[in-house]
Image 1 (cartoon, rainbow over the protein chains, first blue to last red):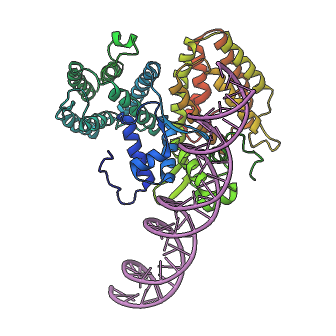
Image 2: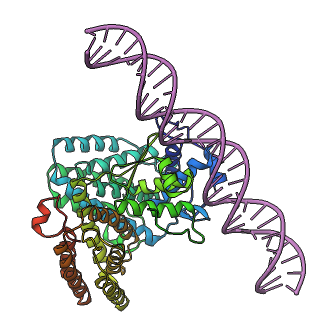
Image 3: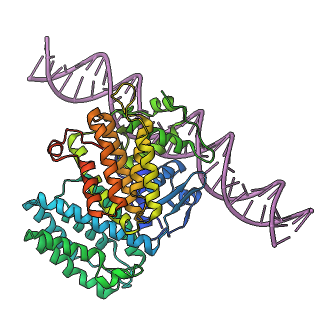
Length: 228
Length: 228
DNA sequence: TGGGTGAAAAGTATATAAATTATGTCCTAA
DNA sequence: TTAGGACATAATTTATATACTTTTCACCCA
């Protein structure tokens, strides 16, 4: 099971297993609400208990893991309400970060956006089974959205955006949008790029909002999965 | 130096030392940028290295501590720019949370606000030296602001607000506002309470903004310490 | 059925060992 | 003489193994 990821130079086992755990939670390999016993994780990742605990505590602060004193750890549960809350917060935070980015707009920003968009549109979104999202697309997608906000100077907002992204990505992976919707994403991303290149801040914010929250109809039903 | 705080039933040493560390960082006992060697902390708090590391990693996710692989931990540094960023983010997040709270306004909310305000206004802000803020006021102040937002249902925004509060409180403690400014706080808080009781959302948001960011003159100089 | 008991499982903390980073000295070369 | 680099040593961080505590759960008895 364990990916072949290798411990990089200068990194600690704790950081390595932190990345692995976050990844497995976000991709849904570790299920929401699932109990995370140290013994099973120790075996799964082939590391000692100490780095494991350290990684789990780190994840608990970003709410991907729930830690309870004397009772161990479990994957954070999911719910339609929590999903709606995450998406709403993400919309607010990313809008703020985008407006912040517009204040420092320059050609480098445009360049990063164009490069990330180029990669994104040339990366397949669905795996051969048509139901799961590929890892490559997931990475390209994240890089694209980070490029969009990369001119922003507010490290605090960017840190929050980062946290929220993991949660949003988890919901997306747990319930991937239908293929038809997936194809609409291309034009949504493209429109966003064009609005930014044209320095149309209001348009860009509006498009980002729609992109995150989906259309009005979907917003009313928090159980539905809006596009990403 | 160590407070007489005692380990509660059901709590772990790790959680206890986490609270102590956060407290010592926020109150400025542990200085910004200061190196946190495990040996010195082990001695200071009289706990083993394992719970210490777990606590430090938790604090690193909320950016109060910087953790670097193989190089240990240090207290997060401060700067006028970071301070301005924290205050701006706090203003944004708390405004969003306040608007969220207004959606669920009810008499219980009013009651919590009145009770918290009553305690706050009857708690001394400055210690006998006139230069440091008392612990009691700090707690009452935090409780008051949490009461203001307590009707909000967005757990995500409230979580961010919580993180930001610690950072803001640290800056406040590192450079306490002058006594004259401190006395103006009473009326600022009171006006906020009145606006909420009157269900005047726009007024409340405006007052909260001014409360967090201070007056226009102070905003121009990020080195200045606006009121809280 | 319901509650207590005890064994097993799981979490927590310490001490120890291993690996990495930082420090300081000495030597060489300009 | 001094700047720079290599080496050895000390300090520190990281990881493991082990001991200890708490929780969980199945079982038994009332």
